[in-house]
Each structure stands twice: as structure tokens, then as C-alpha cells.
Image 1 (cartoon, helix red, strand yellow):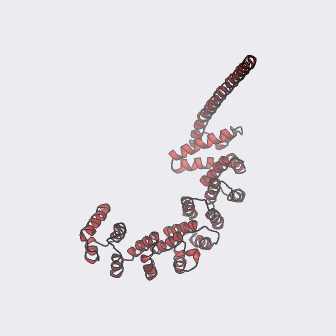
Image 2: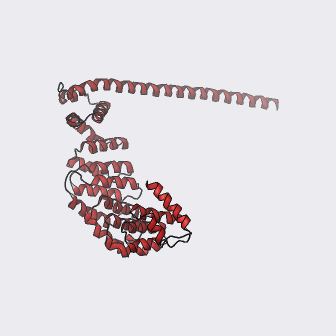
Image 3: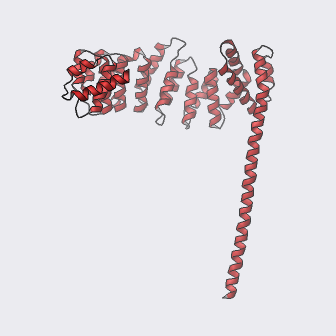
Length: 372
């Protein structure tokens, strides 16, 4: 028994000793790894600082006409970090300058070597590199057929940020069909944010050329496409109405009256109702009135919002008829919308079929205070 106990103690001691040495080794490895990473970061920061100190004077001399662009670009050995730092220097200066000087730097930013560097980035394995390249082409607007081909291939990337960045870069081209294809490709993705679709839609509109007719035709097709999820379709309907694509007003009115399920999802219906307000479509008045009794709060509120814009004695009376002593929140919403569109508090007090005039006066005072 004593021998067994002695053997057990010896084995435990050996196990403890082995564990101790393993922990010592792991600690040393962690320490060495930490020192290596710290050294790598220090070396990288030092390299970036050296390159910035080298490029800043050269770019400033280029602005003064002392150094041609070719000399700056020929000083690059071909390392990725050099392209990245030079681009950062140029962008930092562009943000501080205007006019001819900023234009001169943008020309330098779009020079051949930098263009080719970012063209290769579009084909990189790293998503971060792809996004950087997309941002470059979006900013410089250097979109030729080759670039379009690469960007369009990224539209189906599983990474949503890569797809969005590629679509945003494609908005830099003057070719409407290409921009429309990018917008549709992004809008048919289910897991994409409302803000991303809306931002891309605003980028889709060409503010420098009159392409309204072509853009309207493409947007018409996108809205009617069966590939769009309801939420994204609603965003496009609402966004195009805010931008005021006049050619879509009649379409949205007809879709509002449609009984097809595609146009009766809550968010789509809400967007179609609100669109009537943006286009100030008085013809839609009688079509909107039934939605005041809708049991879906967002639909009811959309109808109130739009009908408030169409103010007439009949509409004002109709909206005030929906005031309820049981729903002060809805009352406030109705009063806010009526007063925002020019209806005064005295008219509301005189015509509202609410017995508790004190509560109504309080709501009117709240709205008047918010508007002042």
C-alpha cells in the first residue's frame, strides 16, 4: 500500500512538473508573439510616417508646378503600402483644397499606376481590398468597360458590403442601364438595409446630365420586377417619389388601386399612399379616404399624412371626425398634420366633434409650441 502511494505521488509530481514547463513555454510564446506584433506595428507606423514625409513635399511641389506627376509616380517601387500612402496624402490634401488645385490632385489620383493598382485590387481575395478599390473608382469616376465588368462580377458577392461598394462605384458611370442594373441587383437582395437601397437610389440619379427620361424608364421596370422583396420595393417607391420622378406618379396611382397582393403588403401600400402626397395627386383623394378606417396603424397614419396636404373643408371635417377621446396619440398626429399644412387651431376647435375641448386645446398648444 505504501509503495502504491509513493508511486502515485511521484507520478503527480512528474505531471505537475510537465504542466509547469508547458505553461512556461506558452507564456514565453505569448510574450514573444506580443513583442513581434508590437514590433511589426511599430515598423509599419514608422514606414508610413517615412512615406508621408516623402510624398507630402513631392505632392505640394507638384501643385506648384515644380515636379511633374510622372516623377512622383516613378518614385514608387511597386509596393502596395506606397500606393496606399500616396493616395492617402492626395486625399488629405484634396479635402483641404478647392478649385484648380483640387482638380489637379484628382488628376494625380487617377494617374495610370494608381488606376492599375486599384484595378488589381478588384480581383483580390480580400474583401477589404475589394472595397477599397470600389471606393477609389467611385471617387475618381474612372469607369470604363473593363472596370464595369469587374464591378458587375462583385454584385453577387456574398459579402453585402462588397456588393454595395461595387454598386455604389457603378453609379459613377453615365450609362443609365448599367446604373439601373446595379440598383436592381442590390435591391433584390433580402438582407440589405433600407438605408443602403435609399443611398444607392439617390446616387442613381445623374445630377449633371439630363437623363431623367431614361432613368424613369429603368426605374419603372425595377419597381415592377418580380424579383424585389416587398421592403426594398417600398423603399424605391418612396425614394423615387421624394426625388420626384414625375413620370412615375401615374404608375404609383394605378398600383395604389391594384388588388394584386404584390401592391398590398403593408410597407408597399404605405409607400404607395405616401407617394400620392409627394406627387400631390388630388385625384387619389377618394381612393385614400377608406384607409382612414384601416386597422393597420401605419396605413391609417399614411392616409392622414397625405389627406392633410389636400386640405379642403370636406377633408378637414373628415379628418377631425376621426378624433377620438380614447386615442390622444392619434389625435395629436391628426392635429400635427393639419396644422403643419396650414389649418389653424381655432378651426380645429370649432369643427372637432370632441366633447373634451380642454384636452383638445392642450394638444393644439403642444403643436403650436413645437412649430414655433
